Length: 164
Image (cartoon, rainbow, N blue to C red):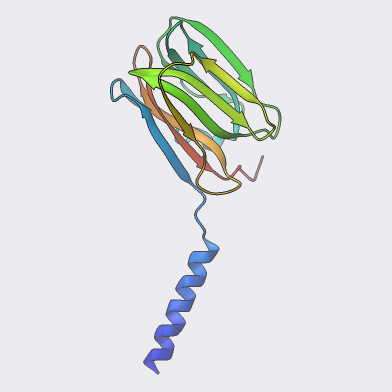
């Protein structure tokens, strides 16, 4: 009798685990340990990533700002350099991020599910390439460290928001 009850509980537990499959994953932190921590956690509740602003100078990624739905995150990083801005098409998502770093972030490349490569910065330093762990997931928000430049970046992946 107890054997059947235990077996029933184990089966129910396994079924619940299968129903609640994990979809979130994390890559990083790529770069150095300097600067102040930042996180856009919570901004993903505003909607999917719809635009990216990156400030660059001749050597480094200086600053970052991401638009979630129609709301821009706080700007992180320094103020010197050229500001570049790219908007994603409706329904377009970032599915891969690569780049280079040496002390600070030097290059970022955002690859979308529509085949676009959104590239910022210079092609020197240690390479990284980040993709989500689970299939059919996209970049939902970023975190990292920043001061006068972007010291490091972390990439957080999950399902595309259903209400968008």
